[in-house]
Image (cartoon, rainbow, N blue to C red):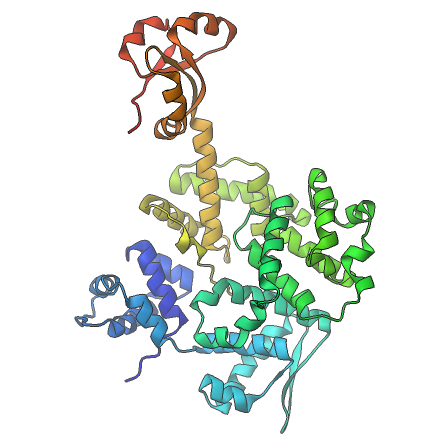
Length: 468
């Protein structure tokens, strides 16, 4: 019997590695699968493992699967295109080419024309939300119908999905689309310019902002090369005052000058001025700027704060980042039509087991309220909140020393702060300490030498050890 290994098998295996096989409930939630389906997939994964011992017990299957270092290689080698991926492939192909040759695609995808006709029903439904349609002309093929701007809108979303998921998609995607989305003539330039823009525009608050900007450029400019020089954004907004009219509410006033200069020389500045409203929406998404969601942020904050407290006994405070995160979450949770995008970048983070456990706990609770919140965003918020709380909990202390060379202490400063969860404000020799304390409000001091104990009056003393 030929196994039909697909993208979900790959994702499930990676999630098993991530959780060390200890949280199938998380896998179910992430992949939108029930336990029975998970177990079926485990059995199929187990069958491709070399020298396997056959078992039907879930824990044993997971143990066998995770014990094989080459499992990921074999899964990728045996990967076939699933119905879900096939519909994605057909939709992306249709948006790029505006037509489908079902005879040729039947051969490429290894399925019958009848199967493709069934797939087209799902394709038609998926593009209807962009006011697009498909028509079939006997003897000629299937054609895309709709306004060009709506095609670009849809294409932007589907290219984004491709860029986020491409490492897990079947090889047919790479063979068919990689030369378009990673064009050798423009890719390096575009990537560097996106990186520069993200830096000067402070647009690096969320994962996948680079993919978002790249997908917009490809769909709205690179694949639409009919924009005249006169109609480009940089030529319609060729003064800083004009530029401020459109972007003044999005970017910091201090950075507007640099962003304006960037648009005058960059690929993004070549986008049609007619599409500027769509570019502004992309910037809003990348920064979490949704003014229409402001009235709801307070209620979302109460929900998040309660979940953080009940799940992790962790406090949550409002600031610019948290408010933008909540605004973005509020906007996304209201979307009636949702294209599933499996964000897996958290697998590249070097997270310890405790952090993973806490993020999963948060994800499970937040998903009960926010049906499409991503695990990547949950990880991002947890790391931010945990880091902020630690900074607030850090004691600010003065290090008092006697015989230890000050130079050595200064070299060890960063390590001492990390190891002891403190912030060192100064290094003072004990012989100068009495004069120093008269001029400064000192609450706590840190010492490495026990002999200093009786030289510091009634101050709180934190005894430290030199880091290894």
